[in-house]
Structure formats: C-alpha cells, structure tokens
Amino acid sequence: MLSRIERSSALQWLGKQLFNREDPAAFFDPLLERINPMWVQQYTPARVERIVDETADTKTFVLKPAKRWAGFEAGQHVNICIDIDGVRRNRTFSLSSAPALWHDHGTVTLTIKRLPGGLVTNWMHDHLKAGDTLGLGEAFGDFLVPEISEPLLYIAGGSGITPVLSQLETLAAADYRAPVTLLYFVRTQADIIGAEKLYSLRQNWPALTLNVVATNESEQPRFLRESDLEEVPDITARRCYLCGPKGLMDLAGDLLDRQGIADDRRHSTFFAAAQAALDTDSLGGAVHFSRSDLNVSSEGDAVLLDIAEAAKLSPRYGCRMGICHQCSCKKTSGTVVNRLTGKSSGPGEENIQLCISVPQGPVTVEL
Ligand code: FES
Image (tube, rainbow, N blue to C red; front, top):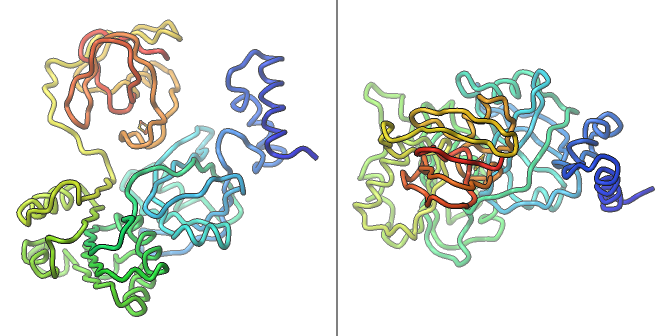
C-alpha cells in the first residue's frame, strides 16, 4: 500500500508525464473521489461527524478532517469547498472549536448561521448530513490570542462570536489569569450562539466577565454605548478583539478611539469585507486575460474576480474578501485599485488579489 506522500508524488509524476498537466490533482481528483473521498489531493477531505443546533438559524458542524490536515490556531479561518448541484463552491468560515479538540480527538467545528439568500450556508443547513464529506483548506488568519498575559476585551456581535469561542476556550484551558471581558451583542437572548459553552466558561474560569447584550428586546434598539466600555475595568490597558457585523465594528472602532486605545492593540476580523468609497467614474477599462487570450471590458467598481467569472473563466478563490490570498494572480501591466483600501497599484508587474482589485484603465492579468 502506498503512503499518502508516495501516492501524491506518483500522481503528480504520472500527470506530468502522461498529460503534461501542471495541476494533476485537478485531473485525478474526480476519479479518486469515487474510489475514496479521503484520497483527494487538492483539498483535505473532512467528514461530517454530527450536526448540532445552536439557535433557530445557526448550526455547529463537527468535522473530522483527514489526518494530513495541518491544524490551526485559535481564531483562524478556513476555506471550505462543497459541491452544490454539480458546481464547486468555496466559502470562508472561522473555526469555533479550540485547537485542543483537533489535537485530542481529531475533530474541529464550524458554527454557521444561515445568511438570507446565502447559497452555501442555506445548502449546508438544509442538505448536509452526518457522513457527508466536504473539502477543507489549510487554516489562515492573524486573529490570534496574545503571546503574553495581559487584560483583554472582546467585542463580538451575532455569529462573530465563533472565533472568540475558540479563543476563550483556549485561554481558559491555559488558565489565563489576566482579566478577560466579553461584550457579546445578540438580537435576543434566543440568538446567543454557544450559550452552553459561554456560561460554562463564566462559571469555571474566574478571569472571564461575560456581558451579553440583547439589542432588540426593548422598544429602542440597544447598541454598544460609551458607558459599556467605561464600565470595563482598566479599559486603557486592554488588548481588544473585535468580530461582528460592520455597523458594530465601526461603532466599536470609534468608541475605542475615544478611549485612546492604539491601533496596534486592536485585532479585528470581519464577516464581510469593508469597502473603501471609490470614485467609480475613474474605474473600469479593457481587461486582457493573457493565458486565455481573452479581451473584455469592465465598468465601475467591478473586481477582476467577477469580471473573469463573467467571461466564463474559473479562477481559484476562497473568501472573496481579501483575506485568504487564494485568488492571487500576476498582473503584468496596468493599474488596479484595492477595493478595501481605495489605493492604486503601480503600473507594472506584481501579484494582486483578484477579489479586491478593480481595473483603473487597461489591465493585463495572467489568467
Ligand atoms: S478569494 Fe480570498 S483573498 Fe481573494
């Protein structure tokens, strides 16, 4: 029996010799998938062990990745890929379990909320079942627990709690002694994700102060207030972690500014990419996809990933919001504007992320 590494090398060699293919995994994977899904090479297969209801619209998927998966640090994200009606879809989610679960039991969890109109999240809720297999990318992201013990403040909203759950469990297991405060904003008490875990942490880990705020249970919506931060002891000494919808993140950012908390003591992770205000009149242009020898034109703030897909190309992508770099591609000429920062690139050759790059005049991309 060949080992995984031998099998992978043999397939790569065979693919190159017989078919002159640079990416033999893409060629052989459909065959391997039929023989044994856990042999697929392009991504790490992960079997769904069980599915747990968290709230009316949120489920936790307990996954068992193949052993070759490299693991993760608390707070990181993964891309998953899943076939829906014959089309492969990629999405990015945070891991909600602590790395200890992977080390001790070989499992990880993704806690996923249905998004209105969300193709993948709704499909996972409605169709994914125990025993199914999905593809898991390697973990990435720098939303990580501090290296030294210092007071922490977490501000989370809705399903933004998922990487925070992973971090809190990790800190508690390490008997983190510095004070840790979590301000968790949910619509109603029934929308608390990971309630059992959070209340158990509060009971068993004296460092944790948990403050759950229901925003929609009174006549007036109850958002994050300056007084919430003023009530956090020694707020100016805290390292701050923010994860939630854009409105909460913006508000928290303003209030932390007022508290004088420096940028290098803040860590944020978004559900969706923040976007810079762009002058769309100066954007768009002729796009040449050089490998495919395809010319198209673009208008306004369309990003190159959307432009390529509209031209029937299938570039690789993961998060579609500038985090994972899976869509990185070489631009050989022309200028693009970064959709997140509003900054223009230089005119020459460089690697760009297709999902956040908007042409500003004629552009040539190696795709
Ligand atoms: S798809 Fe993740 S950075 Fe572009």
